[in-house]
Length: 300
Length: 217
Length: 92
Image 1 (spheres, chains in turn green, brown, red):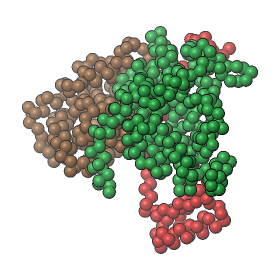
Image 2 (cartoon, helix red, strand yellow; image 1 turned 30 degrees about the vertical axis):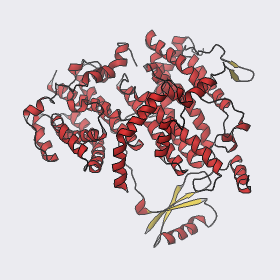
Image 3 (tube, one colour; image 1 turned 90 degrees about the vertical axis):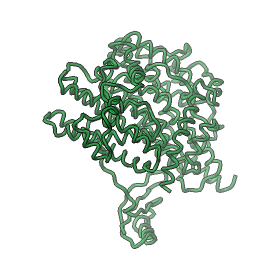
């Protein structure tokens, strides 16, 4: 490692932050691009399972709130891809790599949605899991990314409200509606427990080394359980994991080992909806290619 | 139903269905920036629909949601123009341009109407629609030289004319520099008839709501 | 020409508007900005932007009070109490 690189590592490890125009080691830039690009991909792919429900939302207020939520996600991917672009990878290239399967996106966006219960559980719990990771990124060593995270976390907080409201309203409804919520929770619990990733010791995690992330995967999962399991239980819902309990002495949650093989399988392009959603992206890109050509030609 | 309620429902149905159709672009527009912009337009339209339904609902003793979701397909009074399923971007912008032009005339007429409640709402709506018109014009300028855009304008023109009541149609023709279509050409696009894809849209938009009748969501 | 100056006080922070200055061209503007906002080492970095390049937008229309993307659009308290009562989990 060069002296300059050594100095850089010490700088970020002591809490220092880096701007786009600063010198940075190639490894750092490469890891940043990979990590932030996957975040952008996830926001963009997160649009697809929910946009299917905009048409079906059962009241005007829900329709508006869901449209606004999906809009926020498209907006987040714009913010995030801009950060990636300034690091040297153009948005168009990110989109190409996404469609070709070269880059990844978060596990939860590879699964189907079946009912309005899924819409509530996604907005409430998937967004809650996401906001935990994103809040930790407010301290990311790469300052332009950390700064946009402020806006992203702020907007996500409304999504959680919307989701919780949808779930609460259904839990106050008919037995059939309550069942829709429980079924959705059963479907999403596995992916939610996988969401924050394998428990890598932070010493082995290059993301932690460069202070791109400052929170361990397991720590994020514990935080999620701590914040949300009591909220789930108090509604009379059952978490589909017989092992789940909090050890009051250590303050830590015990749970069945998440299915890491499934996580790996899903994020490498084999989720139940992966190919269909990528295909939709590919087609919509193809269909609108002429528009981008005209607009960019006129801008040049 | 009074003439007032009928007119409110026509307008509300147009805004609701168009808002629905515009929201189909969320996540798949040509630019991410456009996903966001078009989504706001769609939210405004649905917001307008809700406000119009609310006035009608007070008169009819019902609620905005019941008017928006619980009528039978043939009770909706939307113009066929707003019902066409997500078209290509050229046709989407052509509809956007034509609808905003027609809507400007309609909203001006409402602002001048003697109905204080409706005129007040129309003024509010118009202040939001002003931004839709700017957006439509920007895109019209961008796409002007595209044959497929011009073809879409020509094709959608009769349906756009049919959005307005007869007395306002000459004004639309004058502002857009187009000739009014013949009555036989207009016939298929008049209110009361629906686009081919209307039943499917109705099925989809009422699906969750119908699944547990009378439930709160 | 008038230039607007944005300064970053510490690494990682957002640039914030600091003030404006008048200069005959970009080069002078940079030099003056350095003097006005950097001579005590009080800035980490500056952005110097011709005022004509700044587009101000201050109209954000919301005529119908849309509340679904704001906190006040959701009143969970009452529903939460009801849901707890129904589940028998209300704090005693």
